[in-house]
Length: 269
Image (cartoon, rainbow, N blue to C red; front, side, top):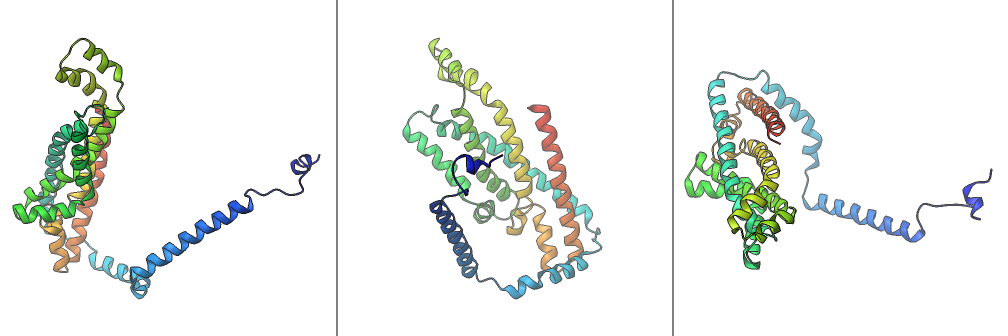
């Protein structure tokens, strides 16, 4: 049986044309040059990189066995961390509702409010939680208030963006039907828009709570409350066994958060 190439009157076959091969080669070369330039510009001390495995082994050796002397205080602050994430998520969810309404093209009153809503979303998401925490520690002072407000400001952009996109994707027929009956704007929102976005609302709120649970563990590094305060203190005093206990507590908290968020999604959605 003759080959496919012989049937079509060709002796050889290649996947790419010469022009396509040169284009692919140029793209790969550009990527390699970009990586090389990035490595040269960040001034990596390669001696430290090669010595990192030995340093990690030494550090883990100092952490073992974990010190549970201060376990009661660690668990108390860990519960404070959960409260920070929970309160911040609840406040952010409430604040994101009007922002999502303004940022959605099919619900915003005019072009000015559309850009206002999107400016709020971009501003919130473009600043890292630690930066927000540093700012609010300077305003409110060290403590959980600064941590709650920092996570809240960061979460508004995340929740508002996803809710705004969900609002833009709703079925317009229920909205048009209520408007045709002369229903008020509030009733249109309550009976035509809200029921369609509620599954997304709960899914996004649970997801953001899970994320905030992780982010709240590092707020203490800048004085904004949470388990990070004890971790920073243990690192500063070279108390590596206690640092190991804190890290294990954080790991347990993250695992519990995953289990709880998965349970809530199954129950609510």
